[in-house]
Amino acid sequence: MGKVIAFANQKGGVGKTTTCVNIAAYMAVMGKKILILDMDPQGNATSGVGIEKTPETKTIYNVIDGDAFVHEVILPTYIDGLDIIPSTVDLAGAEIDLVQMSSREKIVKNILGRIKNNYDFILIDCPPSLGLLTVNSLTAADSIIIPIQCEFYALEGLSQLMNTVRLIKHHLNQTLDVEGVVLTMKDSRSNLVSQVSQEIVKFFGKKVFQTAIPRNIRLAEAPSHGESIVSYDFNSKGAQAYLLLTEEILQRNNLNYNKINKNTKINYRRVENE
Image (tube, rainbow, N blue to C red; front, side):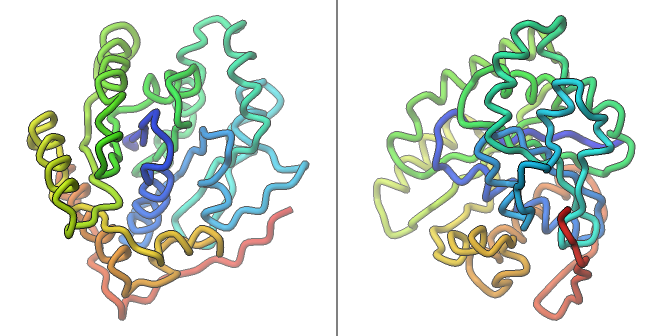
């Protein structure tokens, strides 16, 4: 049975979607069967893997609303082994719809239960809020990865996020665990960054991944081309950091994987969006 990992932080701009998409891409290249569930109405994970959003695109919102079955909305991406359930701005309406549904916090969990066995990992890109979409995502998840930007303001709201995790674990999902914390946009030349990093390590201890993600222009450019960093610029510092981070996650889960380097042949799929 596949493992469901939610990527969450109610603070925007911390590299949450970038981290979700690039880890998903690397896992797929390493031989794992991966599904991204885009639960953010902004749909950045969807466009970040090259999916063109059109009025005809069926999304997770259609499944939540009962207009489609989950297998009908799963789309292949250009990387072999990586699929996505897309999202568009319409998903914002799901917050209102969910309020009126019975067992509203477990809707996404029930949806994923139908396909969980088909994947090694299902990675959920949560919205930058602690509303019902995020609550649904954390209720459905086995664990959570928290990307934190290495700056002072990133520490604000951290206790609120962890309180939400504790409440969900107590009332809705007793097995929810913190998979790890990723330090993102790290500039090792800054003394403030070092101080913030130390505070985060004090708070989370060994849950903080050893691999930190540096500030890197290639990471910022890749989504505009509808690509992950693994295909956009494998030799960049950002790509190498996400490679090491993905290996670290797989090692923590005691899983074997295919080692990759710049000479690895990546299987790309020809994808035609309807």
